[in-house]
Image 1: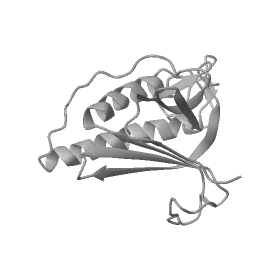
Image 2: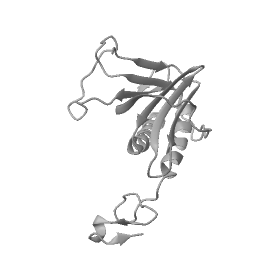
Image 3: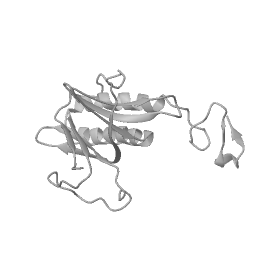
Image 4: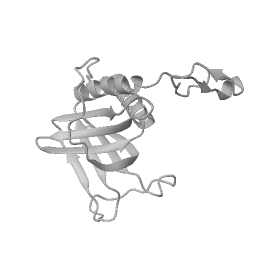
Length: 182
């Protein structure tokens, strides 16, 4: 199957969301532009890392004198349906376009070689991994960060000793030599 590149410049809506119960949730990045809807599955830790890295990028831009809002309304609605997974994200990348003053977020499909050195693939290459590419204003990024952090925090609380998610019944904590932590 040839490579697919889903480009949103800019989307009507872009958010991170999750479906399912804490401990059993599936996380998605979702972009919508009119009737076009793309959902990309990813891990909770990837959502958290994306929000953190976007926050660091915005701080760097503020430090360079670029006007970045500190607060923006986030999209707190649920994911749009139907949620048809286009692919599972393996690699996430961020960039700042100095001409348009937009943040570019790119999610590339998980491939067998994701542990290896990342190879740059041209958009024209029909054999590369699928890609979701979204361009956002700094204000939209601020809103995305807030909502993404809320989605991550809505899960199971972390163990105060090891940081692993706590089940309602507790868990065997490696930092407590296998003793139960609640």
